Amino acid sequence: MFPELRKKFKYVGIETTTICNTDCFCCPRKNAYELSWQTMHMDLFEKIIMDIYENHDVERSIRFGGMGDPSCDKHLIKRLKFVKKMRQN
Image (tube, rainbow, N blue to C red; front, side, top):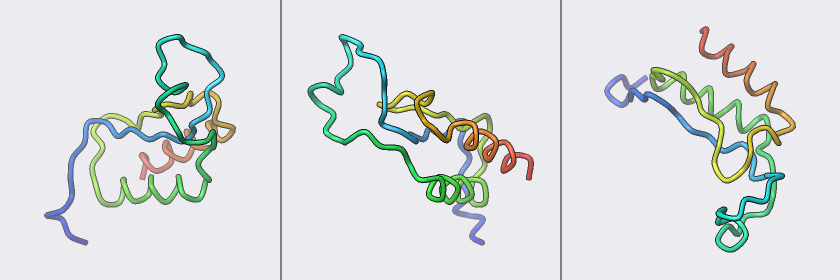
């Protein structure tokens, strides 16, 4: 649509969950992280990923992470398959 606005990224990070099942002594989430534990809706995730791939170039990968542990995301496998499908298009 607007090629001049298209950006190129090496990596894009996305936090799909704030859930974490570890108790690291150095983690700030006990004292400084005020968000409740939740997981991003799949519809929102798909919208974000489609927007990224339709409007920008991702050189290497989409990274899952943030304050939550991606392996605690109940939709992780579906999300990975969706990103792979979008990358192939």
